[in-house]
Length: 262
Image (cartoon, rainbow, N blue to C red; front, side):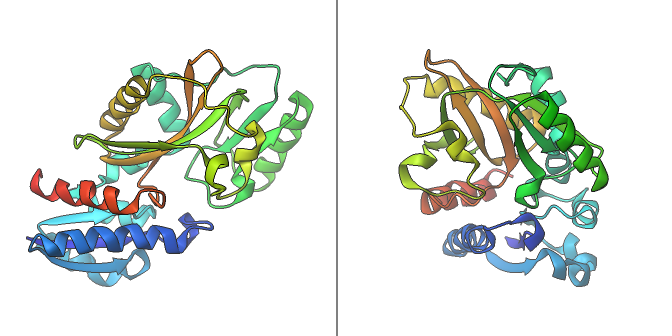
């Protein structure tokens, strides 16, 4: 099988360029060991490859640029262009409500999170905490001054922050507490403090986010959830193809196995 791997544009890999490339390279190694012909290009190079995209039997893409998604729209792609578009926060919020994914309330007594809604976060300023409604209003105004008119607002939820990673349909699912290993993209994990490791149903969380992934239309996914002291949880972030840096080799095997199912 002739397979193309597309590296994500650096603007969509804040503080994670090397990690994002590493998982894609690991997937490529798995595919080559399985006997496939594999080529890797960056999203920025795709314009030169666009005319030949149809010659590939399968494409594994981390790309998020609008022109990338347009070029991939009608091809066999992991993750699909439609699915990646659905991961824009405002669109995703609507889908989460549709399928009943546990989400944070809009109001609470512990502050708010303001997040860019038209695309994945490209910098720390795209995801901001506000201690109260007055600060939230000021930060919304600052968003609008930056030209960001699409955004989501949710209440801050106290509890353990966990990061989860999965490959839909393969059984692969892992979760980690970032305060245990100190890995962080923007440092926002510290807002919830050191993890208490509250007991919760991992199986239920996996089922909820697997359902979400399938509805969104992606196979390779990750995200964040808050586990409350009573074991209930809410999903606070969900995205297409994370770096899997905590479980890269296992994830690469699971992602590579998708070539045999499409």
